[in-house]
Image 1 (cartoon, rainbow, N blue to C red):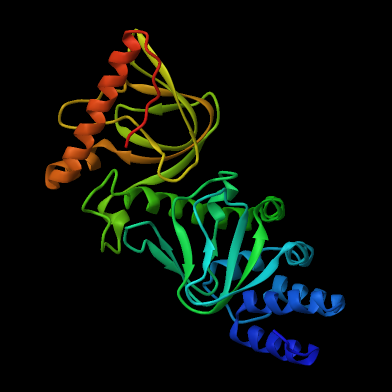
Image 2: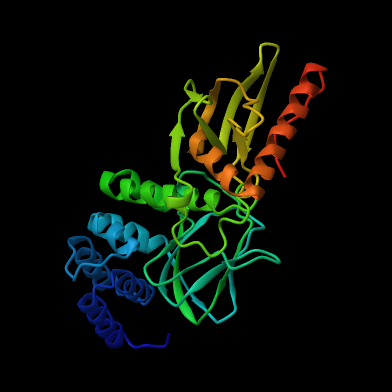
Length: 325
């Protein structure tokens, strides 16, 4: 990192020629740190104007939608961080407060005693789910597989910047949806023997991510909903109502609209009491999977049994919270 000012200018030119706006932004940050504010502003202007070959990189597509002032706002808030092979970038012990743009290198998600969940590389973003679910906590650890460089951006700054640019916000919303759906359909807690080794999980378990405001309803007659964050009320019987709440912690999502060959224990609708983020899966899809895959049938039969225990507890006046293990 002991490059001269001239070397950073040359690196910036190379980044623009290759269409790597994230690398150009990294150069701008280092120039800014060395008092070269005018040079950094010039780079922000070129980044926002798209003065480079097109790229499919998510971060590149976001940056192209920002004004020069928006790019500069991110630049001033971000912190470069060098990673070494094997170094832990972020773990699951705390909330996600940083969105990470990968300039170079590869990082992988790991869980204790489990398989590698996925990898991210140049131009990818880590932590964007927190744009929807502030202070979301993950259970995975992200570890560098190679030496590399990342830019850490406070999520609240990124959120504020994107709020003024509809196209950029919609692009990130699509990515958040994709990541949340992927996390649910690959969950061995819900779909054992499906996630491992599958490249196109959404074709196997079609699902969609949705957001609801307070006062809305979920149709539990035709679909199940995995509640990621928010508060909802279900009414399994006329005499039993209870609230299910989730804070967005990965691995602690709750299922509403449970369905299996035994029946549907959750009643016809769920009422949204507070803003909710859910992943919706059609009952027809779930019943088809249960018919084909015995372990999925066993899992959803167990969910049915847990719900019936909760209903019985509430009918006896014993407070309980809906959850699954």
